Amino acid sequence: MTRAWILPMLSVLCGSVVATELTLQGRPGAAAALLLVFVLLAGVNSPWIFPRSIGALEAQQRSAVDGRPIVFWRSGCTYCLRLRLRLGRSAHQLYWVDIWRDPAGAAAVRAANDGNETVPTVVVAGRPHTNPDPEWVRRQLSPSA
Image 1 (cartoon, rainbow, N blue to C red):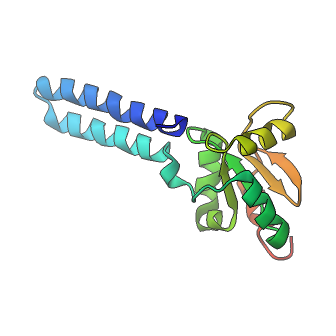
Image 2 (image 1 turned 90 degrees about the vertical axis):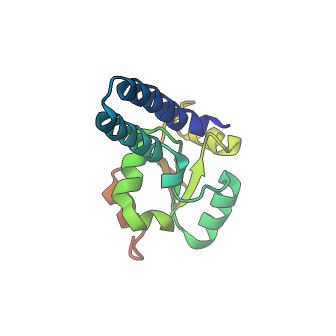
Image 3 (image 1 turned 60 degrees about the horizontal axis):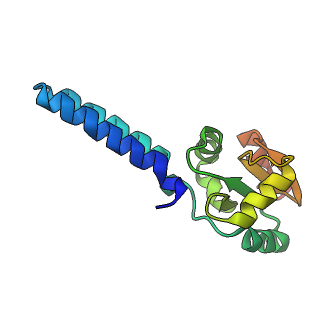
């Protein structure tokens, strides 16, 4: 299991423990509702909500050809989640690199952020932008940008 799944698995585990306790207290409705909240929390923090990640080197090569931005991210990052959700369907037009799965991606982020793994870091035309506004990122996808 990679680091990307630690937070979602902990969410499900904690939700299961609390739901079991509520069930034993005779409150199955509350247990089911609470477990649903924990499962949704796990889903939102899982890598599944993001487009398929590729390696940093592959993303850089593809971006050099078509000019599409690269997003360096990691699961559990609320700012990454905010960017992903605010981009909506446009998120699939970017190249996503999970820095917890790709050491080259983590190194690229550290190089851009004074040694820190600050995400999301969006690279547009070879220039890194740390935690940019989602609307700015969306504008970078338009042909006139």
